[in-house]
Every structure is written in C-alpha cells, then in structure tokens.
Length: 289
Length: 289
Image 1 (cartoon, chains in turn cyan, brown):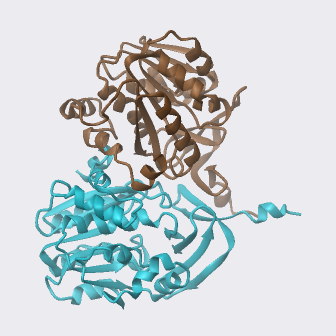
Image 2 (cartoon, chains in turn green, yellow):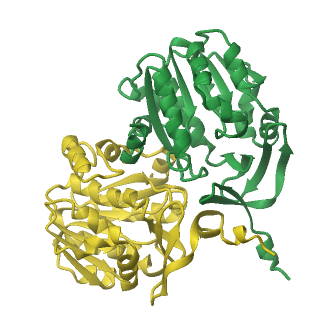
C-alpha cells in the first residue's frame, strides 16, 4: 500500500559517515558493471543529466562536468602554453582529454586508464565526454597508471594530469611519494603536474597529505579551488606542481585566455576565474602551513 | 530486529525535489519550536557541531558559519570603511552582528529579526554566535523587517545587510522591488546594501531575479561568491548594491584587510579572497546578462 509516487523517488547518495549528497534519478541504472577494480554505474538524474559513478562516488554528471574538466585542463595549459605532449592518468570518461585537445599546441595526449569499463560506460552513455576519445592525437592505453609512469622515459611530457577517483580502491597507489617521484622524473624540465586533490573539507587528510608530498618533490606547489556542486561540500581542489618555479597567475595573458574561453564556449573557466581560483580561504591556507 | 547501530544513524536533510544535502546528527533535537512564522530547530551534528535549521533548511552550523558571516560583513565594511551605522534585517542567530562589531568604526547596529524564536534558540544553544547580541552597540528589535524599512527615516544607514532565510515563508516579501526601493531610500548617499542572494545553482530563479531587481534600483550591483559546505551545492552568492558607483576590488587596502583578518583570527576572509569572490564563473556571468 505504498504511495506509487513515493516509490518513484529514487536517490543516489555519495556520503561519508557524517555528511551525504543525494541526487534524484529516474529509477533504472543505464549501466551497471562490477569490473575487477570497482563498480561502475550510470544513472539518469533529474537535475544533472546522466551521471557516472564509481563505487557510489559521483565521478561526473553531464550538466556540471565542465567545471571540473575545464579547471583541470585550462589552468595548466594557459600557464605552459608551449606544452605539446600531455599524459593523463585516469580520466576514462574523456572529459579532460576533450578540454586538452581544444589547445592547438597540444599535439599528443596519452591517457592511461586502469579500467576499460569506465571508458565503455562513457562511450555508451556520455558522448559529450567520450567523443574526444576518437581523436587521432590521443593514444588511449588501458593499463595501471602507476606501472606506466614507472616505466615511462624521463622528461617525456610537458604536462601530467592526475584525473583519478578518490584515493581508495585502485587510485590509492596514485597518492604516494614513489608515484610522484616518477611523475617528476618523466616531466620535461619546464613541465608541471596537475592533480585533482580532493575536498579540503570532505577529505582533509588526503588533501593535506598530497600537498605535503608534492612540496617535498616539486619546486613550486600551488593549490587552486573550484565549485563542483555534485561533489561533497561543493568545494574541490586541484594542485599544480611545477618542476621549475611557476607563478600561477602573474604571467597569465588574460586577453588570450578570454578569447580562448569565448571561442570554445567554455562554461566555467575565464581569466578572472583562473586568478581567483588560487586565492585560498584562510582555513585552507592554515591546513597547508 | 533492526540493527541498533543503524537506528542510531539519524540524518537531517535539506533538499529540493532533485538534490539533497544530508548531515548526520546525534539523535535528539536540542531545540524544536514552531513559531507563528516557521519551525526552528537545533541539532547536534557529527561533522559541523550544533546546527540551526528553519523549516528544514540549514541556516548555520557552528563549524562552518564563519564563511557566511565573514563574507556578508567584511566585504562591504572594507569597501566602505567610513560606515558607522548598520542595519541588519534577519540574522537572528547573531553571527553577522558578531562580525560587524569587530570593526571599531561601527558605532551602532540595528538588527530587525521577525522571529524571537530564532534569537532564543541561538542564545540557548549557539553562544559563539549569539554572544554578540549582548553588545551595547546593538539595538535588537523583534519586528517585521519590511515594515521597519518602510517606516525608517531616509538616509539613516551607511550599510544595510539582508541576512534572511530563503525567499519562502516570512522572508518572501524581502525579495521585492518595493522593499529594495525602501532600502535604497534609507541608505546614506554613499551607502550600500549586501544581500544573501541564494545559490546560483540551487535557486537560480531567485538569484537572477534579485540581481535584476537590484540593478533597476541601485547604481552599481556586484555579485560575489563563497564556498558554504552546508548549503546545497556548496556555492553561495551575495549581492553588493551601491547607492553610488562602488568598485568592489580596486579600492581595497590589502594591508589593512589582512591585518584586520589576522588580528581577528578570521577563518575565511582575507584580501585575496575578497578580490577572488567577485570573479564569476562564465555560467554565472551568463545568467546575469
């Protein structure tokens, strides 16, 4: 005797033990597969379009993925406009590659995704993200990013992007000094790493540990923030680590940035946002001191 | 035969029809009263300390209230350092008044809160917020803010702060042209209004309508943003409206701002954050065009 309207209100919840973010969806799972690494699912939500989840954590949704993908790609590429070879670890949905390939200077992207299931789910259900995976400039490799980076030649990449899920499950080994020493080694002399570095509020431990680890290995480390409504607390961080000192804002050519952003119809990133993202609230600064 | 551990996991949820933010609490309500206006409750949460809610919307929590209250008070007061008389509409918890009174130039604050229940709940359970309500520079009036503003003398205030709940229930009439024309009238010639202006993502309609309304009445209107983890989507906006043109960033004395912020042990606001808050992501800019 349940109200049929109530049974139709179904929610996906991304939570830790004390806070949770829930997103209403339309009932059926468009994709659901347990790979050897993790559970990969796609839901159709009411507010955010299709949503990709891994082990009950939101990876991205059609309607807000641009914020994350624009910020992880365009911030470093406008700081290192000479970058031509890029390595992406993770990022199986294709959103990061899509943004990287908007830059004509990027001639070659290698993406190493551990789980082909993520790529397949995205190809089947998230074409706005995965279409970039067809680009001839992309070399898509299904492999363990840790092993790949360990075996890669030195100084081979201008930019490395760590577009991983949270540091649990298969992504755990990505947040280690050994991994980041290898990333440092495979970067060109003026190269840089950008890592998604969790929420300073929701995953404070991982956020602080990653920053500290990068500070021991790289010569300049700068954290930046973006509003991601479908990630817990809505505040997400990225960390930019340069092999040589890198000023994250003062060298920026704002005219170039804004022309690029307009020409590509970006939804989040612009020159003001680039500079503003590096301004940290005092409680975040204190965490990193 | 329910698992007793499960029955102890109790959650407060702030939701619209499609997304929800849930915060785990310890079970009992510390305060629960239905006033003639709204339902006022206080919970003890695990992640955020004590939490004040009105009609199942989070108003503030002990552990993150500083972000909202610092941003609503210090941004305008550092832009109008000569401000001495301030009117607060709403704000019954006391957090905004606490931040305002950190400025030695502020000699008189009038706060008009419609619901004494909010004040009482805060006095009983949120001393870190409500202690400011004892200050001799404060005149606390329990009354309808709309009526108060309608009857107030012209040019009486240097700053008006609209620290209301969402524009439903008793706060609805606060988001009307008539109300804001009266606010404009009671401001001194160089005065300004700051209004909490909802989430551009969660309450897009109210956010856009308020900005448009203020643009028709005030001579300069600037939106700014802050990360508020316990509000839905985590992205919250404030709107600064000047009776005369007001540049929100270029006149800022950064040394003064940072000394002030350090001396007062602020947790969120600093000079970089002040400037960064006015940098709007492109999708927000487009909403306001």
